[in-house]
Image (cartoon, rainbow, N blue to C red; front, side, top):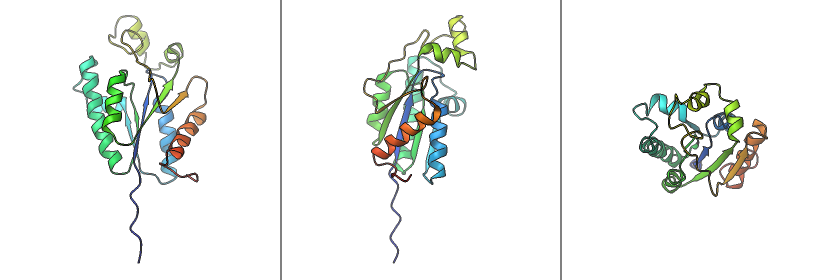
Length: 184
């Protein structure tokens, strides 16, 4: 007689930070590591979601909230099915991140902390340059606020840590919280 396979314990790792803070890069590395170990991983990335799923929304406070409301529901469903969801969104407003935490039963907030000046230097798309020139309005960190997390589960300092160091910190958080085992 065989034992039924245990449903994996899902979690959403919500990585927030300024545009160009390294959220996507680190999450992609974490995803690669987890997939190599056989974990069910889903990626939700702000640029991809806005291009494909929420292209009807702009960047007003109301539209940003709606964007994240939709993403939160997707993350909740995938988490409930046992996936490790790596969600990378600027998500500039604290109250919207708090709503995501309240909606998703297993939720870890990771703050990709990076000074604004470093983010500007990393800006390969020229968004900061456009915002500073007044050609792009409501840009987080320039003319729209970013409310830093008050009590994140983890802070990664992407300006001073290597990608591997930030990845290791997230994997350690997942181990310490019981979502993956020590060998994984």
